Image (cartoon, rainbow, N blue to C red; front, side, top):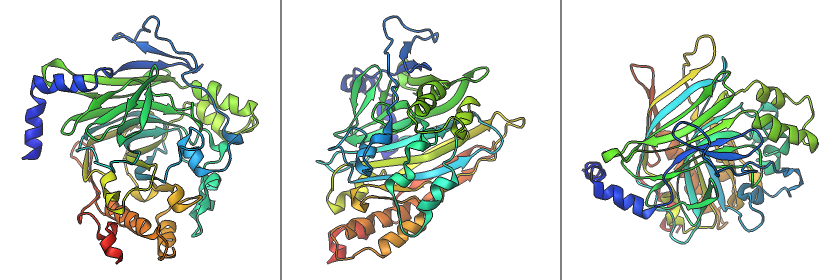
Amino acid sequence: MKMLCVALIFASSEWVRAANKEHPALTGGSVFLAKDGSAVALDADHHPQPNTKVKGWYNFVDPSGSSCDPNELIGGHGKGDTPWLAVWIGGSTVSAKGSWKHVSVDLDLPEAPAGSKDVPWRHDMWLGPQPAPVPASILEPCQQLTPCNFCTYWTPKAVLYNTGAFLHVVAGNKMDLNLFPGILAPAVNTSWLVAPNLEAGLGAKSKPFGSGFYAYAGETLKLDFRPTHPPHQTWRLGASVSRPGGHDVSTHLHFDNRLLSESLLDKAVEEGIIQTDDPQRALAAHNTWQWLLAPYSMITINEKPPLEDMPKFFPPVTRWRNFKVTTQAKYDTFDTYFKFLDGLALVGSLIEKVEIINYTVWTHYVNTYDKASENYPYLHCLDAILVGNLEGSVQTKNKDGTLDFIIDNFPNGHPAECTTEYYK
C-alpha cells in the first residue's frame, strides 16, 4: 500500500513542482571529460556548450607523499575529515573475454536511510565498472588472519587498479558532492542524489563528477555504461528517470579513455610512482574495462553514532532489475556471475589502522576482539548487519538472460546486537 501511495504521488504535477523547488539547481545534463582533464557541458546534440569549459576538472594528485593514515586517505581532504567507519559491500564480476560493451540495470529506489541525526554520513549505491581487478600480489598480504595495514592495500603504485567509473546514488547528512562545474550538492536523507564520476587514482582532486539530479523513493533509475564512438575510446556513464508530464531527467558523463594514460599514468611515471613498463599502462592503452562492482554500496560514517543508530545507515531492501552485461569479445554474451563474498572492504578508526577485505579475516577480527572494549558492541553489531546482508542478497536469472537482485539488509529484522540492552 505504501508503494502504491508513492506511485500516485509521482503521477502528480504538484509533486514535480515540489521536487524542482526543493533542488532547483540540479537538473542533470551531460558533461565531457577530455584527455587533458578539462571538462565541458554538452548540449542535446552532444556538442560543447559555449563558455562552460573548466580546466583541470581532473587534476592528478601524487598520493605517495601522504602519511600512511587510512583516515586521511579515505577522506581525501586532509586531516579532520576522518571517517569513523567506511564499509564497501556488494557483488563483483570479471570478464575474461573482453572489455564491456554495455552494462545496464534498472534500480528501484527505496526510501533513503534515516541515518543518525547529528553524524556526517553517506550511503552510496553504485554501478561501478573498473579497468581490471586488483592483482592477487596486492591482495594476498591482506588475506591473512592478521589484518593488513591500510597502506599495504591502498598502495600508490596501484593507481589504475584504484580507478573506476562510478554511477553514484547517494543519501546522507552533512556531506556534499562537488558536481560540475563546482556545485556543492548536499547528500540528504529524504531523497537520492544521482551523479556519475571518474575516480582516477587517489587524491582529493582526482574524483571529477559530472552533473546530477535528485531522485525519490518509488522511482526507477536506468543506469548504464557503454563505449560511445569507435574505436571505443570514449565512454559514457549515465542515469535517467522517467517522470509524468515530460519531466524526465538524466545525467551523463562522457570521458576520453586516453585521460587514464596521459593525465594519470604518464604523470605517475614522471613522479616515479610506477615504472615505464608497469602493466597498468598497457591496460589503459588497450582501453581495458573488465571488472564490475554491482550491486554495490559504500557506507561512510564520519563520527561515532549511538549504537542503536547503526542499522539506520542501510536501506532495508533494494531491488536491481534487468541487469544485462555484454562484452566486446567475438562472442559478446556474458554469463554474468556476481560474487558477494568478494566485495567486502572495511577501514576506519573503529577498526584502527587496518584494512579488512575478507569475511574470514573480519570474523576472526571480531571474535578475538577485546569484549570489554567500548568498540566491541559496534563491531558485533556491524558483523550482524554484514551477515544479514549476505543472507539477504539474492540473485535470480530471467528468461531473457538478464538478472534480478534483491538486497535485503535485514532479513531477520534489525539485529539485537545493535542495542545497548543486548550487552547488559
